[in-house]
Length: 306
Image (cartoon, rainbow, N blue to C red):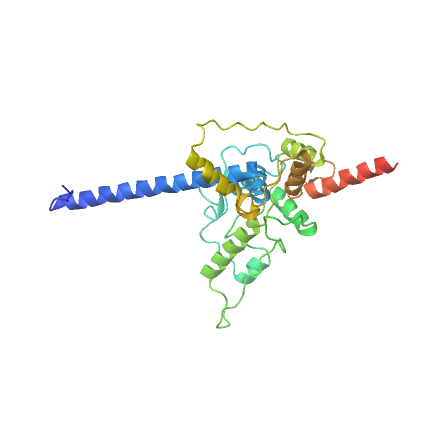
């Protein structure tokens, strides 16, 4: 017998319950699909396919995904001379503002009598009314990235640090402050999207050694599949699969050799900076992985020739 809702007040309760079940079911389906996608990505990476393997390494070393957001958060909330490996106690960084201990953004803590800056004033550098100012670490990284752009495999090219807002609208009148606010936030988010956050020093050195061949990663032996013997029908299916062209079966599979992995690690390492505080110079020193690899190869070549 099919289920029918009762009359009166029971219908709304049943509707709410049904909507909650549908929402929960949709959430579970989404999580299941994400897990299946991740499993397929790992399987293809283990088969040596270049793009899936590169994506896994980029996620591992914080060039894309959640790890990148975590590394960028440390950069946004760090104190002037604080190491980026240290956690900022009681502070959480967001792309739309830095939250203080009272749970307010920098813009919320300013006096309400402060007049919001115009588009021209924002272009002249007065953007901190709408978005947080750059920390010294972030400013040093942006300046170095602007002068020495790395290999841009995952991030758009950083072309400037200052905003360029339209100062007049289509009526040749000063841009409304609401649009100035939104455009400033868009510029800030676009700038952060171009940042290559630095790796912790120890992790950066380990990746450098892997990319240069100074250190090797032990290979885990593949686990043999356990299952019943294939039936006659399964054997026929496997035979037909073996007849498929290589483009349909293996795509760009590659044997995972030490040389192949060094090339993959080097591709990722080229986009990874490291930051160190120079006490004598009183400034932050930035080193790109790409420059470090070039220096190592040059010294190796000179030692061989000498």
